[in-house]
Image (cartoon, rainbow, N blue to C red; front, top):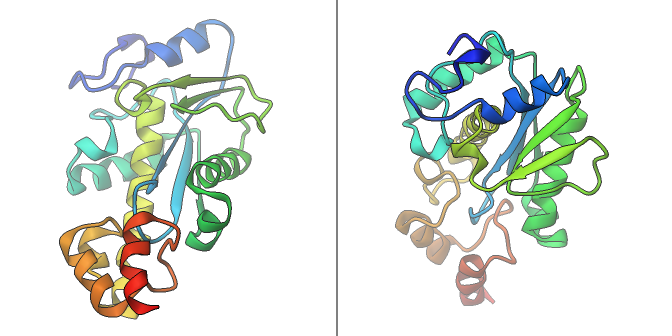
Length: 216
């Protein structure tokens, strides 16, 4: 979609209605914010913030979970090339265990927003409000399936996190990170039962706690 006036993405996946409402009110830079990895058993929670260019919104934007890996990776390249700004931030497993996953998610989002240059004037956030951020904001339930900016953030966060998790396959073999990217799949659970938790596992998460008890 190469025009903000179009309203609906060419493939009818996401709308730019939330963005247009903000632009028409005088806001110049709208950032979409989303995270990935909240439900994983290992690895970081990763957030991204994206300020799309109103005149160049990539076709096919949608919730990253609804896209294939090739589709996500193609869109990741397009978003990075065309966006006015984007930033990615992560909070590691040990900090997740210390402050809980919800607070870690908020922290990752806040870090990503803080890294945006130029700074946004308005935020569209998937499901959450960030009390630590003074920028005007709007929480949208299932925002990654409705807002092109939030969808874009979900895509670049997902591509970045998946790449980081796959990179652990060599140093932490046996858990299947190349395929499950830290989620609780059967191969991951078999690895946990055999090897116990690694240094990137979230030790306070239920699935890890169950397998961890076998080694104590």
